[in-house]
Length: 148
Image 1 (cartoon, rainbow, N blue to C red):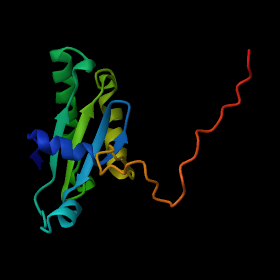
Image 2 (image 1 turned 135 degrees about the vertical axis):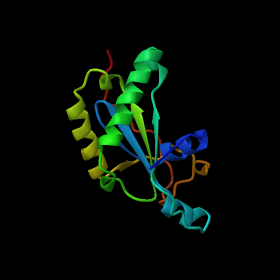
Image 3 (image 1 turned 180 degrees about the vertical axis):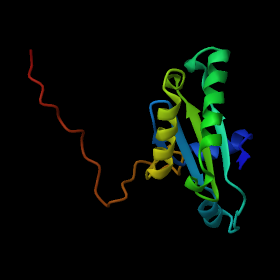
Image 4 (image 1 turned 90 degrees about the vertical axis):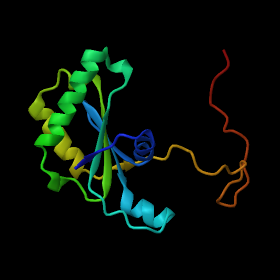
């Protein structure tokens, strides 16, 4: 298992699927299907994982402790639960400082087994306000607010 280190790799994974947990967010990206769609090549490289903790989660020692706990979780997790040809990013949350380690390990196992919620960041092509379903845009719906 390799580590993600380049910012571009982290940004690519951020556009993929995500699973939320109280102590972390697991983001994942299937490199193999992405390469087939975009570049026509097969990426059969190893599983790669990255760790990140934002500044809003505390000062540097607290963030480093969160990051160390997340790395130890991945070390103790069996690699069979991770899908091949995927990139993963664990985004630490402040609850990772106080949450029990065994509970976090169970949360991580569940996150890898759970079907991920796909998110789209809205970075696709702009549509100039055109609807794709063939209907014309109408006025905004009126609210049922009573006058004072």
